[in-house]
Image (cartoon, rainbow, N blue to C red; front, side):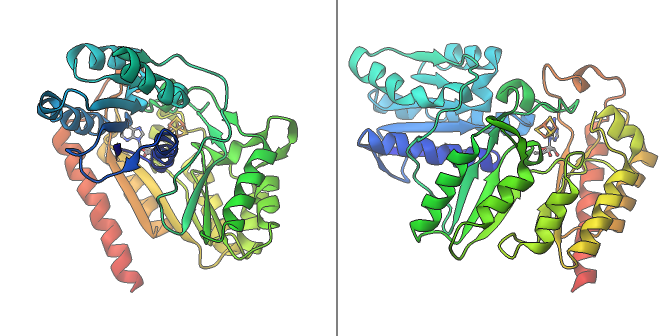
Length: 374
Ligand code: 5AD
Ligand code: SF4
């Protein structure tokens, strides 16, 4: 029996697909790159922007013929799209060839739903929100010498454009002991040279058993594990990154001298309306501190252009901030309206052609910075 997983979106999804692979291999499936040959295809979807949803829908729609040719092929859709009630229901209704629609909170029930399909020929839609973290999920790691380790799930920040808090729920941190054990196993296996800690906002990590134990404590404890490995983490919200964490990046040999620090915009007006809870000046202070304590730090960021109300002047503020920081890499996105978010209802939505112009401008500036650095 063969499986094929198609992953959309962020590293969190890449890692969750590794867990899906682990569960499928436990059931006796083996990986194949061919959708035609696969007995089960799992789509792990992303909902962050409309484009990501459209790509997933297009890919899923293409399977109709394949399912007709082989009605025994199981088709499952997981990930952030399916955690939205209305989207999940629509998927289930409009694509009768989908056998399983499963939300991010229910992922670990996938083996049961597969058995239900195999034994009773029953389709399933399961996406109830749960407040529980499931440990010891079998994992097939697929990212070479890097091992992803999730330290927390969900997000409490409600940036006004973002759908993540709605689909992933509130922040839940894993117990420090579970995280340290997983890291020890990874290092002791001898297969990995790097650990990347994952969370929507890793800097707000708190051990559920000890409210005094924070992200800095976790980083130093992981660094104490014997062995030759590098440690890095994403994503850091600028409002939560502490001096302790900056000091650790500077002093701990195992921590890579790199940081992904999404700024989103350089305009204080837009940052406020995005509900980011920091100002341009505060962000630049953090960058200053980072650069002085870690001279060769590799800084990357995310930028959203065309957020509602973004004028030419606001966009100029973003461009000047980028030039000032001189990032080593930028992920630039055109604002995408997400249903249920605060920004969805905002006036002064920016036309697509302006968003397009601005996103290209950001990429141009970034290219220039890289050329100047050569
Ligand atoms: N539109 C465009 N970009 C978005 N992001 C999050 N939500 C949206 C949206 N509605 C971007 C942010 C975030 C990254 C993961 O995706 O820049 O940091
Ligand atoms: Fe979305 Fe903001 Fe949470 Fe990041 S911090 S996941 S952008 S709400």
